[in-house]
Amino acid sequence: MRILIKDGRVIDPGRLDDTADILIEDGKIIEIRPDIPVTSASRLIAASGKIVSPGLIDMHVHFREPGEEYKETIESGCRAAAHGGFTAVCTMPNTQPVNDNRQVTEYILKTASRCNGSRVYPVAAISPGLKGEGLCEYAELKEAGAIALSDDGNPVRNSLLMRRALEYAGGVGLPLISHSEETDLSAGAMNEGETATRLGIPGIPNAAESIAVMREIALCELTGVPVHIAHVSTAQSVHAIRDAKKRGIPVTAETAPHYFTLTDKAVDEYNTHAKMNPPLRSEADRNAVREGLADGTIDAIATDHAPHSVLEKEVEFDRAANGVVGLETSLALSLALVREKVLSLSQMIEKMSVNPARILGLETGLKIGGSADITIIDPEHNWTVKAEEFQSRSRNTPFEGWEMKGKAVLTMVEGIIVCSIL
Image (cartoon, rainbow, N blue to C red; front, side):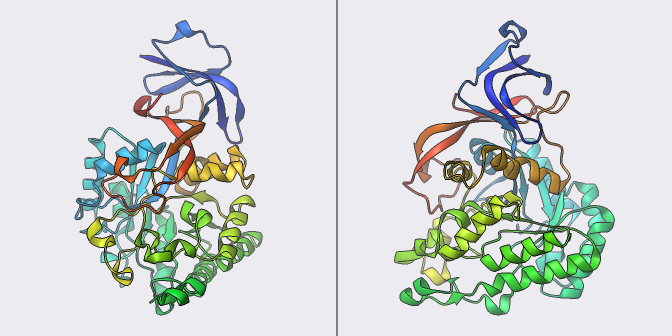
């Protein structure tokens, strides 16, 4: 079957930004140009007034399968991703059991292959059990289908082990993603500051993140092996990464929508849906993150989608689990940066598609012969966040009731429409 996407504003950063049509056959793009005849296809998708972009890629999600399927399954996570406009996601390894061996990696890929949703790329563990006491078999994990390595959820505390991990990862060609945290400084439950003091909640200083970021930059410089910094939240981290890039050190970084949208004031009234790690920071940090996105210091926007049930969230604040769901709100929050002139549309798509693909070594882009992984966005679509309507199994969002503008209205993976509200 031939599919024609008609009259959309096609934005493929660095290649194209113009009104054009896209003709698709057998999962591949076969033509991109204006005025392709409607008779060329058996199915027409009218995209006038919409943005047609390469499929969005979320390089940092937590699908709780195997082990905690009551929070999220691979299937429900793929549905949530498709609903949010993501054609591909990278699943972090802190499942139960941990994705630290071939069997778990293969299980994730086999389960994902049965889902009618986004592509799944497993991220495997740096160390067995995420314990930071040795290295996994990276070559075997890559052969099994792992796309990258991370102990996300836990930092690698031993600097020598992290050096060896970088060297081994570089040798087999797997990107390494760092959860940068100095745990001796991060025993609190929210950002250290005025709000924490007023609420009587133990605080976590910015240095708990930035010290660890600076170590990773030093090890990156020492080894010459690229390192990617996950969930950047502090001004000091942004400054360190910016300086490292100026010096030619191959470091990349991501942040999440909650860090450029919210501050620690969202924790008022002990709101556990605003509890995460790293925590929401100050207004100065939020502005620094936005500046880092604008000037290219921060390469990617990732959700750090972290589903939890009421069992983990409707408890005392200091006992509540860290994390928020983000797949179904990320695009709208990122489009707000465009309206506020922090990013252009092209820059936003670059950070949500092109750059994640580049960092992970994936193919992307709207090109003849390429896979038809496509997201169609209506930037004027008004909607209200209602967690009960999420495709995710969990409802832990700090954005409940927010009025949003902008939504993915069609998500296509290899020519198959996996979500559409057109």
